[in-house]
Length: 525
Image (cartoon, rainbow, N blue to C red; front, side):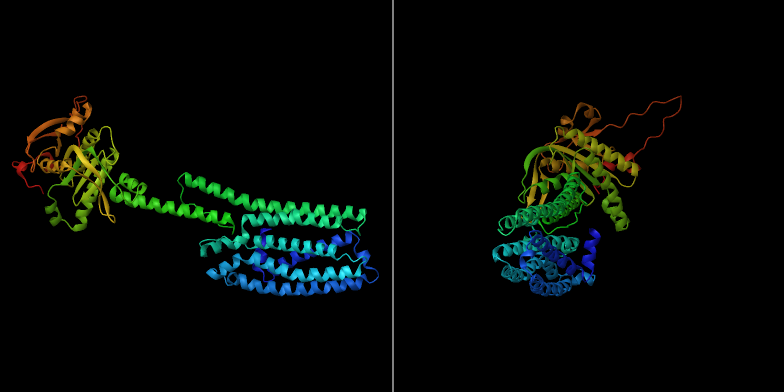
């Protein structure tokens, strides 16, 4: 069947052959039915003359149908012969092809029905014009309905190409409801009406009625089996494909594309699933890009909220990281070398912060502000902040590229969005952030390069507090009261084994390990 459809699409005579086969099929049904009811025997000795007179119009109509079908081949499928995509007008015209050919077939049939019924009725005794008219009318309807179903199936391989041109590939004449009604007409309504016509014909005896009834039943059953199976497959197959596509999307596979093979509501549904996958891919891309700039948590919050985002006040732990001597480094190194060093530092900061459930709120040149407890609330935001600080300091010291200071403070802040309707930024504002920045300046002067406020130590768990010791009470710039500052304890020296010295542990670079006299008074940068 697929090969036959492709041949009919490609061959110049393909469409005319399909249309003529449908019309001849309807004519054959009528002729066979007339023969079974013994109608030809009623024509008398001049039956051949009458038959030839009746055949004149069908011959003219068939010739006209062939000429028009050949013209239609170039009119509707010219772009296919030229091996190019259709234009928008050509695509829209192609969607109207089934209903256009069906209406034209009926227009050709109607005069022939009237002429044939009049000639046959005139030649018979008694003159049963009504019976013959109904029989030819139902035959014309059967032929037109069959033409619609076959031509609608014929253009289906071109629908994926048409869908690339048109946003919507639906057309009212090819809706599921229309297909169901036409299929019902072909398989049930028309054969039954033919049977009613035969049974109501007073000139047909019981023997002819029985065999005609059996014939019409066989026509209805065979046509019904083929048409129903075709309709069921046309609905079930794309629905299975859509179900599989939606299952893949639900599992997170967004590289899904459903081939659009119908001009009905199913085709629109296929297009909608493809648009859904595209929109989800774009949303995921935005989330990824957005998350790189503002953090995954803030990106999720922004994408799931409205344009007017808000914030709230909460207790958080702020961690501030800053590079020592960055001005001197920027003058000594080429810009791209300095940026490469900063990127390696910030990679360490991001990894340590996110693994401890924090948020890198912003990068400020050679510094970074990390927040623990916003926008995602934590039962304990001090312990992971202290743990992240130690990891950042150790990882940076292991690279030996830069010297840093880390300050930690805890307190009530506003965590939310600031800005205008057209530009919003998630940030935290409060004394804890300022205190962390001041502690960072002082941390550059201590050997361990980390200073935490008393509030952070008090809020941490006991296991983490045991790793910290009070360093000093410092009067921070801009604050009225002195601040107790804590720093972490050096890791204990591993015991000797078998009288041998323990392996050398990774140690910070000289700038961190052994500040010279007066280093505590060194400039911040």
